[in-house]
Length: 499
Image (tube, rainbow, N blue to C red; front, top):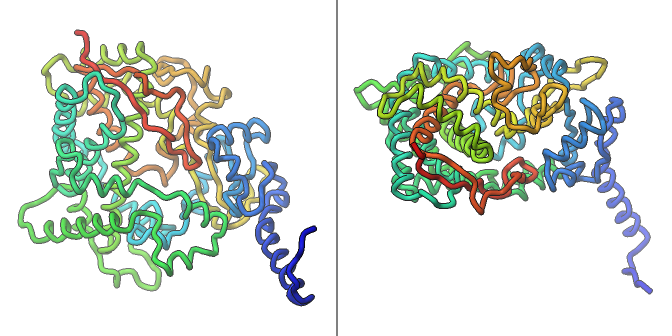
């Protein structure tokens, strides 16, 4: 027989009341979608539907779509997330109603990102418009042509290391291309030669790797108990490695001062932002000027450019090389196109590189099957009715990119790697709202064209003389954790081409 502690009736009442309130706190939000008339998986107290995602978020979303249709509700902890896999509805959310209703991305625990809170991916409404309009000119065709020789130089440097160190070995592909991404980003942003290709264990490389080592438990706790954000902020907890964030913030500050003191003219990303610098006093009573960046905003955009470009570019390149290793016929066809456009020892021109059709097709098909951002999110900032669904203010709307990219209604043989589907002569009518590797609408990826140029350059330089294939360490298919990050490195083998 279990013996209970001898508390007074009042104490027991308070205990039961506290437990009841705690339980209510854990289940209170879960009537949200019932009131809307939107179906979805049954949430668990506090954790919502996150446990379903633990084994594989991509599989979970696909099962939800099959069971509930194009619109369903799920919960990140206690936070409702309205998932929409209907292209027409997404056109309204991401394009038509972007400025009026769905301008902002979901920003989770913004206070815990320190100086990054002024980054373009986190800011909202008019502040986002001002920063976006200021940064966008950095990625025009003219600017990309200026940067092109830099990108080519670092691609050549990286390819040189293959013959010296990596032939025939099992290679962590993301780690391999990350040094190229880092060097290109640092040079394009700050006119600095970091040379992490030849110095992979440099302080810069180590600090950047530390930034990518996210701890999962703070995210989980904050999803389940969002009211703990002020507590985490009070004790100084950061969702990113604080020491590494401080390191890069100080480094970028130093670059900024050097640019201002240097009499020579720089044409990098940082210089363009410095030329558009405004004082915080120019923003009066919340009224935003049309353009310009304050000092903290310049530092934040520079950090986002360096960190975001480094990670997303290297991840996407790893997926593209992985896709080609699994499809050797595609690899050979692409190598033939490269040989035709760039005979041995001939220079690579910007125009010829950007107009390679089959290379475009291969990259597009890889980003369809393995999108680097498998979900897009927007926050509804006022009550709106779309296609008979009343969406309340504050609702987070998600677009399951991976589901749309593999939906048989929009793609023939969606599980097959078929670059030809993106050809102009394929006859396949691609729905532009069922394909969004760089997002859609006014809030898509501002650096898309730059990222494509960087990736195309290294692929051409690499495949001119080398091939890629699977090895004993290659996992098929890739498995992802609940944050859409591969559970294991993408490993492949490099070899010399048989000419």
